[in-house]
Length: 336
Ligand code: GTP
Ligand code: IMP
Ligand code: MG
Image 1 (tube, helix red, strand yellow):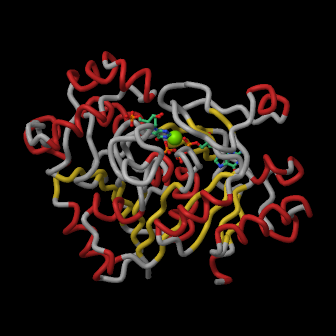
Image 2 (cartoon, helix red, strand yellow):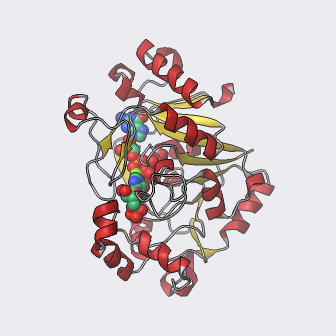
């Protein structure tokens, strides 16, 4: 039985939501806990013809038998949480650490009003930066200070570490991506916290010895939203011709698109302590691979891409996503 952390290896939006949902269905965890910054994240999970967009609830919610936890390092926007709990029907199995920082209207207003954040950095306008600033200044309120969050409050580290000690399957879900880490990303064009696997574990209250596997998710064509350097970025015309356009889950902004960046992938795998790699968007490398679920059915073009990526990262690629839907994936984890 294992505790696995899933994180993004590029600039966020690598498809962590889809990968977490798949691993959850395959491995049947008892707990799925989320780390990361807060509701600036937007995971898309597609099951059949239903598409869900989540910002606060862990994307593993699509697996119905797991308890869902939000770690103390995550900022909670009580309005966003209430809406998602309602829409997704997860009441009774979602829990919030009592020490989570909270996002208030004033944080959202400050994020949007700040020319530095909203224009220079291109923040999501969800109040995360100002709320984390308040936390660092030790003036921010915590989840335990709000009556409307009372019914969700628990000690997440006790839940998660007890499950780990009992040899249960546990998933720790990261958000954002390596390139927008406050420490390791392209500062100042970054989010308000580190986004690496160690940070995600710390957000949830799991120590380094509690982690068995670190799955780093990369997309075949990396994307970036907001400002900042993007060395492999292609022109708008080129991404249009290749049919690669994407739009953000939270802000609906058009994502900037780039080519595979092997150097960044390798560096990111190093800092994340990557043990296994997931690659999404193989159907974008070769349209003939859309929806393929068997390794043997991948085309020579896709296989060549995967071999080169594996050489770049120097870690095994064990999950290959061939489309946005939950079942469109090749899972080779048993072979390693
Ligand atoms: P953050 O936590 O905000 O960083 O997001 P995320 O990593 O969960 O990714 P997000 O869902 O925002 O974006 C990934 C997009 O790619 C979504 O629209 C997914 O439905 C889609 N997607 C995931 N895997 C694949 C894939 O293999 N092929 C294609 N074509 N799309 C995919
Ligand atoms: P903030 O986190 O809203 O302050 O935004 C800072 C930068 O991080 C901006 O460039 C955002 O577009 C980017 N960002 C924050 N969260 C995500 C995410 O989940 N996916 C992709 N980019 C993100
Ligand atoms: Mg996203």
